[in-house]
Length: 111
Image 1 (tube, rainbow, N blue to C red):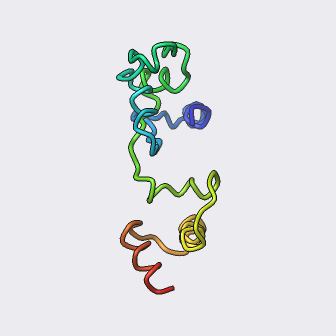
Image 2 (tube, one colour):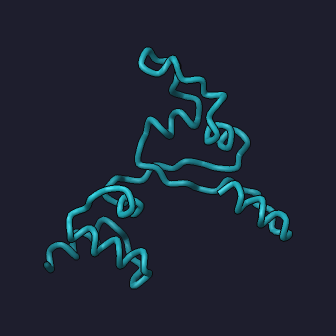
Image 3 (tube, rainbow, N blue to C red):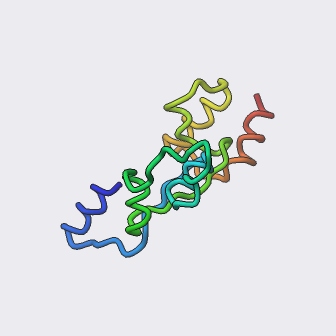
């Protein structure tokens, strides 16, 4: 995302707002904002060395919480139930634009 932002700026389209990145891991979001890291379990992690933390601090990115049920990127990283696989595939291929959670329930009830 940082590269795309720099590329757009070089074309004369600077980005004034942070680019939203959707994440389903609340701890990851906390680390990026610097609100997690001093706990006993994570005290060995130096946040100054994290690229995403730096990007959030500079205002290039903003991490937003997305529910795991609505996380389309799970299609690429996890083994999904057949019904979710077909649903996310249709969503990614832009067959239809719709609200995720209600459409998943409607889609699964038809099958």
